[in-house]
Image (cartoon, rainbow, N blue to C red; front, side, top):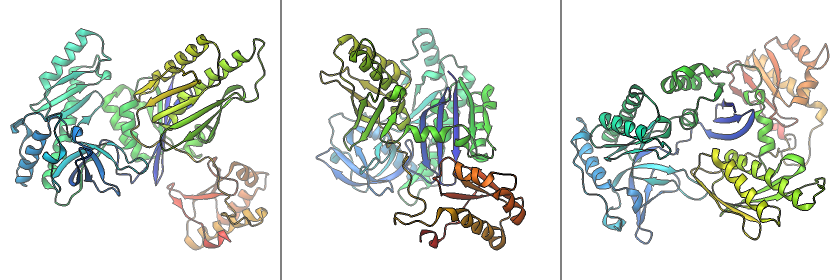
Length: 524
């Protein structure tokens, strides 16, 4: 299996698609101005204590206060609290963590009102982004994640991933990390560190220590709270950190800055793979070129079709996700309904495993499969689902089918489920029910071009339109496009874009910056 990553870095958001054998399996997007990412660390104040919940609400600058439970303060909270006061007491000279004294561990059965007070300053890290009506979820047990190691301040344990089975390798890694870990730090050794050389692990340790020092320096100088003191790496780099493996054939990105960030990161963790990061400078939108747009539109939405006419109905509710499996118009097998049901259900298990990753669905998922009478068929379906989910990085648990034919799945939820609206608004009536004559659409486009060239003075630009409209504009020897170029110059380019509806259009300048050419009278 070969994997490719396609990154569309637009002005407002970054979208990342992971393809396995050209098939879309993961999709994430994030606004460029987004600040509430998992892993971010804030210096913030306790706003309200909730003794009944044994928790408190903390102001981190979000519209809804963040939630911090007593148990999420961590065993070393007393050490953090004392060190925080020592750092803030001297704004000029930073108190080194190596000289910090370790305090007793927190009691498991303690209470929040005896530990915290309203207005108290805390160092908190986001472990769950805001979801629906809930604010972010916090912890005071800070950690800095790298490719091979996770650095944990005020911890004295060296833990090795249980997925590393060889006892000799576990012992080697533990001894190696103990020799390079500074005082008052703990480390978790990740699975991918297996077989890595001392130099590689030592280099990452130094990088993570620098992140901690930069963070605590910002804490020392912070004046106004809440203050972001550590920002998790950009979405593209963070995904590479968690996902990167040698099977990647290529990482395509259409933004020079993101391209440089990715190249620098890959050169650090896998110097031999630096050349797989490629800057895309093609004329077509990057997702159209790699067939991502079409897969997005067919893979999202309430109804998802899969092989032989069968389909899934996926509903999102406040409490859970509900999936219904339908066989569609299938031809009956000679051995009857049972075989039909088994085939439809096995295909649904394949597609559902992909959908869970693709939409990043979390929490409780209930699947209503087609009823099957044979116990061995139900067991086969359960085993198929377990096998399909092995490639899913999120923690999950699958229960066998109940007597009602329902399968229950729980999957780790860290951020809101990805939802791509595949329905298209009418681009011409804007909900009024009345439209201009569509035959005049190209006249409207020409007026926009005339305004761009003769009034605004932009001579070189690209017009993106629906592929059918692009075919019409480009058709013939003396095409509309050729006429426009003769009239307004050769800087006029027309390209098809699969994300646009029939009569939508977008203008981009020579630097690929969006030009808003919509006018108020377009709606009338």
